[in-house]
Each structure stands twice: as C-alpha cells, then as structure tokens.
Image (cartoon, rainbow, N blue to C red):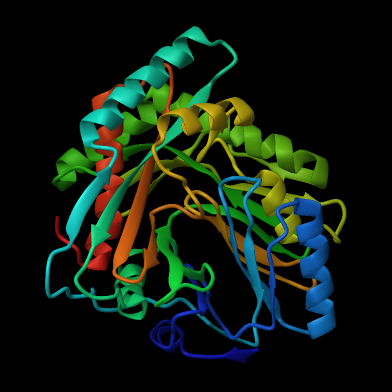
Length: 377
C-alpha cells in the first residue's frame, strides 16, 4: 500500500476501480484478486477475513446492497493507494442535456407519502418509513465516471465521495455518490457512528438559511425522526461496546443544499476481534434509510417504491485484516451504466409528515448530486 497525493488518487480513477475520498483520507483500490458476494453477513465476514489473510491484501473494498437477501460486492484488490483529504476539482461539463425520466412522477411520490402517513397514523407498531424517488438520465454518449469524481469531491468537502464497481457490464457499471453519513468507523478498539436523520432544504440567502436551520433544530417531527435512528444505532452497538458516549441532543450539519440533524456516537469495543465489516453489517440498514421496525418498513417500501433500490441506501467502504475500516451510507448517489445514470433520493416519513415538504426535501437532495455532476435539469 502506497501513500500518494490525494488529488492524484481521484484523477487516477479508472472504470472498475474503487474510490473513497473522505474528510481526512482518500483511498483508491485497483485490480481484483477475488470477489466476495455472500448475502449471509456471518459468511461474508468470515470469507473476507480469510481472503485478507490468504492474499495479504491491505484491504477489502466494496458495497453492501439495501436488500439483505441481495448479493453484496466486496473485492480484494491488487493494489491500494492512500492519501489525505482531496480538496478541489472541476465540475464536469456536458455537451448535451440528458433525457429525464422521474420514477415515479413527483405527484405520484407525494401521493405515496400521503398513503404512508395514513399507515403510520393507523399502525401503532410502525414508527418511520423512508420513501425514495429516482430520476433516470439518458445521455447521448457513455458517462465518463472519472470526469465526474473531481466535481463530486469539490462539492462535498465534509462528506465522503465514492465510486464502487458493481460488476461486469458493457461499458462498466458503478455506484457513485457524495454521502454525508458515516455508518461506522473502527480504529483499534475505538468505534464511531454518525447517523443523520431529520433534514430540510437550505435557505436561499444567509438570513433564510439561518432561519430554516433553527426551525429544523426546533422541529418535533425531525427530532423524533432523528431519535428513532440514534436509538437503533445505540441498541446495535451496545452489546459490542464496554462504553458508549451518546450526546444528549443532535447538532446541525450542512451539505451544499440540505441541513441535517447529526449525532456523533463513540464507543470502545469489548472484543478487539469484532471487525468494522461485522459492525457495519449489524447496523445496516438503520432507520435513517429504511425505517423502523425494519421488517415492517421494508414491506411498506416494497409496496410504494416502483423500483429496486439495488445498492442505493446500502453501505460502501473498506475493511483491513486487523478489523479496522470505514463504512458510509450509500446515499446522494447514482448508479451508472453506459449512457444511463439513475439517481436516488429519499425522505424519512413520520406520522406528522407533510407530503409537499418531503417532496421538496428529495428535490434538494437531488440538487446536491446534480450540481456536483454539472447537470442542469
């Protein structure tokens, strides 16, 4: 494993590679010694651990899908290069505007939110459902993923820019994105999780922006949505940790187009052999991307979302042989194949959600990615 200039790592990305550029480090993995696609979490962790020891590879990299029954794609790379924080890059330029297909139409999404709200109000066992939309963009030419990544990094200075290969396809197939949300980082016996839930579009000027941020912090609906996620993360991590530190109230964090409620949870592991991949698999999916209870929320999602999420709202990251690693939630993302790009955005639906507001939230999340990609709709 070699150290390198962070921006060079982003610029050197080629189709089939894996890139994760975060606030403190950038990792580029190239080549492929083995692929692991075990849906069972225990088998996945065991298989990856054995391959890391057998191959002496520095890390395993890849992505877990939203659906627990679907196949993940983890890769043992041939080479790994690391650097610090990659800060700048040009936004991509497109010769022609894409053809746009919303899935579903915005009005249909708002209607689905209304139906889910009714369900939440009538079903005392269902607390939250995350409902997503997609936008399909068709371009005249194949999408050059490498040309998109510098702009994503520049537009996402405090988050995680990623590109993960999704397997053989004509022209390549990959998941790219700019996630603000750290699911799990393990360094020795120290773990960190930073769930985000409760969001609002940024204001159009500084005064309006300050006002909407304050309103988010005071919102009972968003505080409740956030609390559900924090409780779930703590419940999963507590058996693994001798100590957990959980702030009493969330803080505000911002992306270029959205404010989020954020809680940074830290802990100390009881068993140093519990890997970052094992913890990430145990945490996924959190109520931030699915809802709660998980099985009931999944059923509602399947009923109302007219597409397969695939790796959207999954987990993307890396893990090494010692168990250290970093895994982020695969949001603010697009699946790219040939000349087609499918973008995803979701919103947490609570009993007091307003359909128009949830639609606006997903619009703002789409804008984050579209602006970074240099696409104007």
